[in-house]
Length: 512
Ligand code: NAD
Image (cartoon, rainbow, N blue to C red; front, side, top):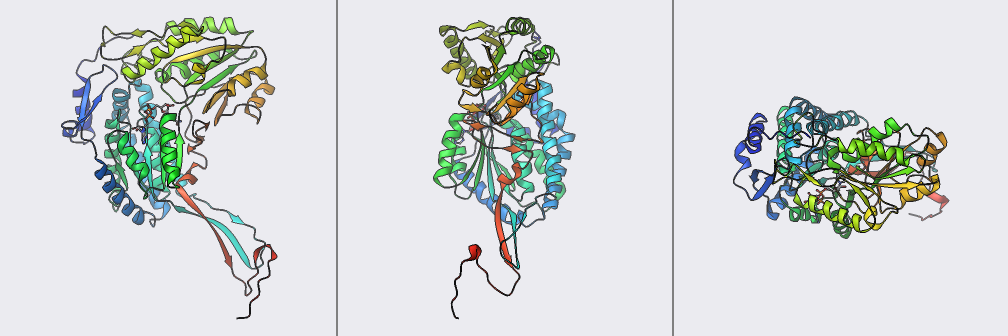
């Protein structure tokens, strides 16, 4: 384990990082929302929260900004995102470090998160010249029919603590190129990275010139201000990332007012390891997906289904690897597993492990470590839990590094177990058998939004559409044609003839 304690206080470091980003460090003080670093549990800021009235006012400005921004040509809108991508490149190291300090990810993953923001900016810039509609064959002579895509309005973005900035960028870069304005409610656990990101966006706006005030606004506080955003009739779309509980509430509230929901919720991602699997690859794939980000990714590997012929061999290798994982301060380069976000996450993990114990689970790891050095923080040994059946506990998402291991006999049984959970986010198979691989990707295979072969379920690229089915919420963000969620589609029929034929051959003649 790597164990070195931070040399200077994290609060001092955050203050210095704010200074380097050009943000007044006074913003870190004097408010009511306490922010803690999961690295050592220390308070790193106390920021001002927005009231419900503030949120209403911010949405009003975003609405006015939308009316101005929607008529700016899309390639010009792309130029703003190009400039923002440049700011992110310049400040990648600082923002990545802040992500590590505030969310507890290892530095490599903090930097990776900012790289993901840069990638989606590049994607959005290209997209700004490709917001294509279709031309459609019409049954009427002398007519044309086509689809046009128009900006939608104010897009609300609610984000979770574990991807404190990338998820916003997936949404905002596309929404702004599509001609929308955005209002962002980050997790109450990670407002500092949001303030930093907003400051970088404002730098890009200043270089661009002529950005309407309020085009991209930030609201800070607890879930109650998220509710104000969700319930405001001026917000036609809310993209919400977080727990299934949150998605259920947000989805219902949006449905009441016929607004659109883009939901990115919990996962319970599995991997099937088949008899022909390349075990060296599988072990590496399992470790990154199961213990990376301390098990706090929506795509974290939570269920491992191993063919009985490999079960003992693979499990023995995993047990060895689990016991040598470097756990510690995420800012140290040698660390691969950082802390859990807070005590509540630790308590939830321990409750789940008690249930596992009581329901016949065979547990390796799971205990708290480094409490002598970091008494206010929660580092854990990732847990491997052998289960004989897929119990209700296994079918739930516990947002912590717990990997359930199950044995299977035949492939159809593995597929059945794989899909027999309420969530449908990500999935993977390790096999060199073409039939198994293609079956897994086929209509009778994985029921998830993401299905991979010979790579783990986590660590998606921005080029594909990201999201999942069932309780994961059905939303798709990021690449492919996800941009369509941020626009409204109009079907246009134009008659350039001198008669007025009706569709379906209907005759409706009136002398006039
Ligand atoms: P959370 O649900 O506790 O909070 C997420 C956000 O929702 C926060 O900003 C919170 O303030 C807000 N919120 C909560 N209740 C609300 C309500 N009723 N109305 C409006 N806003 C509300 O989630 P978390 O603990 O921050 O994140 C972990 C969860 O997020 C896990 O379940 C994980 O799988 C999921 N997640 C999913 C994805 C994905 O893309 N599918 C990505 C990251 C995280």
